[in-house]
Image (tube, rainbow, N blue to C red):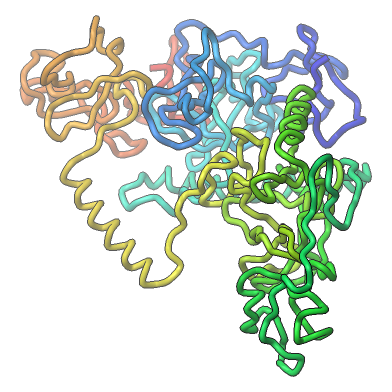
Length: 590
C-alpha cells in the first residue's frame, strides 16, 4: 500500500476504496478533494475526471520555469501547473507523459494550504484551501466532483471549487511579493498579497508548533550514527604529522592582551595555521589552538520544519568564532564512488561528504560529530575554513555574523559536498538559487551608498521600459503560456497561441494581431477590451464596451460582470446566490 509518511506515524489509517493510497484519518494528512465514505475508507483525488467544455477543469501550466523563473521552451508537468527548463533539471527530454517530482511522490494540496490559483484570464491569485465543512452553504451546494476542493480568495473574499491542475503552492519567498509591487497594481490584488503573506506566516508557525509537540510526544531521535571526536582514516588514506621544526612560529607573546586571539595580529591565525603548544611563544595562553583543544561552541540538534534535522546554537556566538570541526571517516575518491553508488542503489538521499583536498574526502555519514547535522543555506551564518593543524588539513566551521542563541546554524555547501546532484534547495532564503550547488542570486548592497546607486540604476531601467514595452508571457486570448506568436506592431506587447486565432501555421513577416482591427468591419480599431482581443472602430464601439465594476478595466460584454449587481450570475435561467460567489467564476461561466 502507498502510505504518505508524516508526523502522525502510528495513528489510524483510512484507505481509498479504488487504489492503494492511504492517509492518516485527520484533516492535516488527508488530501484536499478527498471524499470520506466511512471512518476507514474514502475516495482520493486521483480519481478526478474533468468535465468536457468546462473551462475551470482545463489543465494549465505556468509560463515560467520553477527553477530560474525565466520563460522559453518548457517541460510541463501533466498533473499540476509546474514547468521547468530541461537544462535546469539536468535531464534528457522525456518521451511521452512527464510528471514533476512532487506529483510522482504523490504530493497533493491539503486543507489550510496557501496556493496560487488560476481562474479564467485572471492572473494567478493567492487563496487558502478551506475544508468543505467550513464554507457557506450556498458554496457547498454548488456542483463539485471528487478531487475538487473549495478555495477562499484573499482580497476579494470569494470562493471557488478547483483542483490540483490549476493550483501550485505558495512559498516562503512569496511573502516578499507585496514589497515588490509598483504603484499601478490593482488595489484588490495588493490587498490579497498582504493578507496571504500574513496568513501564510501564521499557518507556518502553527504547523511548526504542532510538529514540535508531536516530536516530543513520540520522542523522535535523529538517525543513528557513531559519534567520533577526530577524523578516522579508511583504507589507504594517510594523515600527515609535521615535525616540530616545520611548524611555523608566530610573533605573539604571553604578555599580549589576547595572544593569538581573533583580534590579534597573529601571523599563524591570518594564514589559517593553528599554533602548536610546544612552538608558540604564548605557551599555555595561546588562543589559537581551538582544533587541538576542541574548543567548540555549545550546540544542540533539533528537528526543523521542512529540512529534517538541523543544528542550532545554545548561546550567542560572535562573528568569526569557531563553532565546530567537521569530522568523519576520511576516504579516497575510489571509496567515495563506491559509497555514492551504494547510496543510489539503496535510495539513500542524505549525504555527508565534504572535500578535504584533491585526494581525500570527509564522510560524516556513518561516523561523525554534531557538525554533520548543519544544513545548507544560500544565505548562511557560518562558513567552512580549511586550517593546517600539526601539518595536516582540517575543516572547521566559523560564524560569518553575530549569531543569537537558538538560531539554526547553516553553511553554503558551495559544490564542496558530493553526492547531492540536482537536489532542490529548501533554505527559503530571499536569494535562494533553487538547487544545491547552484550559485545563489546576488544580494543587494548593504551600505546606503550602494542602495542609492542601485535605485538610480533601477530608475534608468524603468524609464527605458516605458519607452519600449516588453512582450507578455501569456496568450492574450486564453491566458495560458506555451508556444506563442507575437504581434509585430510597434508598442504592442500582445502574444497569442496560433490555435486561439484559428491560424493553421505561424504568421510570417510584419503580422499584426486582431486587437488592432474592428471585430465587425475589420477597420482600424479605436476602442479595445482589456481582457481579450475584442476591439471596435469609432462607428461600432457604442454599447460594446463597459467599465468593469470589478476592477475598473474596459471590457466587452463577453466577460464583463457589470449589471445591477456585479456578483449576480445567471446560468440556464437560474440566479445563483450572490453571497460569496467568486467574480472569477463568472468569467468561467460566461
